[in-house]
Image 1: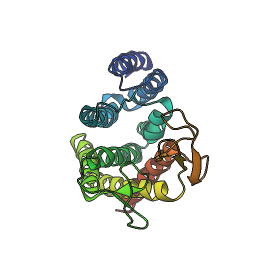
Image 2 (image 1 turned 90 degrees about the vertical axis):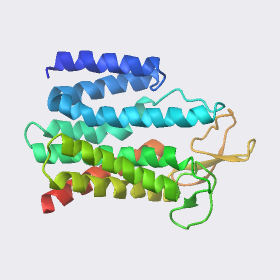
Image 3 (image 1 turned 135 degrees about the horizontal axis):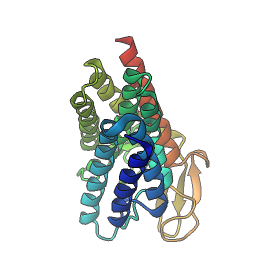
Image 4 (image 1 turned 180 degrees about the vertical axis):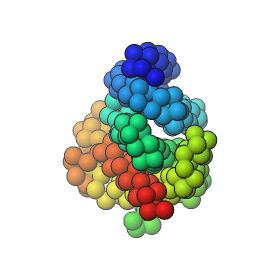
Length: 254
């Protein structure tokens, strides 16, 4: 697909997502740019996995928001779009010259992002509180690094669905297997990073944790652990990179 047609299609889809409040204004701009690049290099086939990830993740988020009407979300920001989609951009750029490597990187990174998103949203429905992946101690729902059995199974289903997407697109037989394994491992890496190096703050006014220096209530929060420059978006970017790299290694080694 030409760059111009790719830009038109991506802009229309991003505008629709912004109207539905699935994206913030900055997120819509980032999504349009990302979609244009992917469509112009990997064509509609390359945009399909990206669209599936975004659509399923947004629907699952809305599913949980419907159960918690007090929770409001303006949609994914530009940093979130980039953190989850940068490997798709890299993979799409490789597709014209190295198709096997390109598709593997594209699908492996998105499988990680999808597994993490599905694990978070489906795990929120678990009846038992999550446990920290590094210590197995009980933590509150939403804590970075916290996992549940339901969420883990849901995440594996997300990785499997992205692997199935690759199979439907006709990638080599070994690639979907590598994508599933890499997506699952990448999801677990995301949890380990979230439990160890990701910044975590505590809002004394609400007596609850926060992932940002200022809690949603508007009160400044104090940092409890982690590195100030490693937030949730940085963790997602690292995890998707790990998933893409692992999928490529597994495919090339087969």
